[in-house]
Length: 425
Image (cartoon, rainbow, N blue to C red; front, side):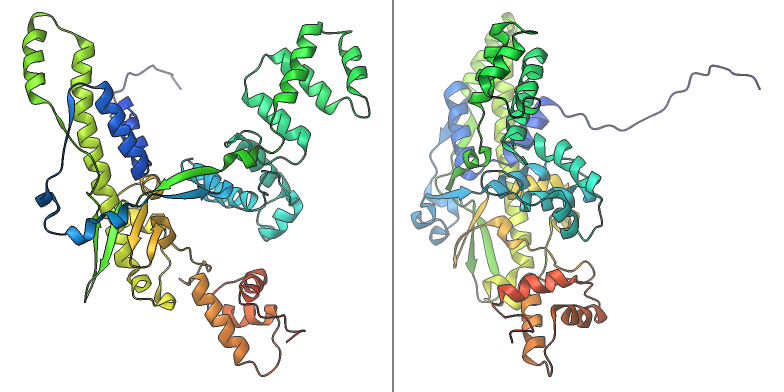
């Protein structure tokens, strides 16, 4: 069989992440407070941008929607778990990697230490994944999240993770590794004297200093104070909920066309790429902010429509809702929905709440059922039981109806109802 070299042409589609596209994506995840700060900073550094003061009629007569009572700044604290899950959503993980990562994150304490053993996490995941698979996710995914050092099983491990993330010199890292893992039972003076046989004193001293600088509880430094200012407001109507974007106190920006015209005349004689870039950046920012606000509103409208039962105070009628369902309906990528939901708040008649709190996962893989609905079902079964049913018995009853639930899931939600076990009932 002859081998021949043949030239072929093929068309391929490929998405290129341009700098402006990346900046647009970054804008999506900014909270209202952060994007207003960003706009004000751009106005300061870009002479082609100017701010318009809004007029009363800009709000189309809906003054009650945008009164200042909805603009009170409240400080909320983002938990370590929320920070880590937000980072997971931005990674291109498989479903299995995400489930394992989520289980590991749920097993961390406030300092970032993994308080459950990997074998316990293996059990928690019903042995669907092996010990080695869980350990690989821990080292290859969790250990790369911020803050550095998270997911540690010992103080030595968190120090070593932090040192690796600092990209220090290989020799310093090697010396640090010897101090941490190969000097068991020795005091620091003996370790130092032993190392001086092979390494210079400056390198040894630097390694010791780097170790001392590491944070032994990296999770505690992750608390993130946020200014909570809602982007959206929902007002109850007789037949439906109206969702609006809060324009009140949101800067209206435009390009200073007079300045652009005068500058462009001068640029014909003396081209200046830096000035042209500033004009382009000004136009881009206006488009990007408008797109961001429109997308936030579009997502908020769909979520409120789907979760109308929440506003009608009918918790048992609230439906499970996921990023995937929203992305499919709106034709957006799930990662875009994830960024939109990050740090976005909505003013409701029941107070200011995170927009993503209206997304509720189903506790069953085969049927759509929320945690509240499952607790109501479990309570009803126990109230009507003729003989004391164990959690396993309840799980079997539910599984016959197609819920596909594990015993531990039933136990978890029974405990949330403050109902004792069958032995104590």
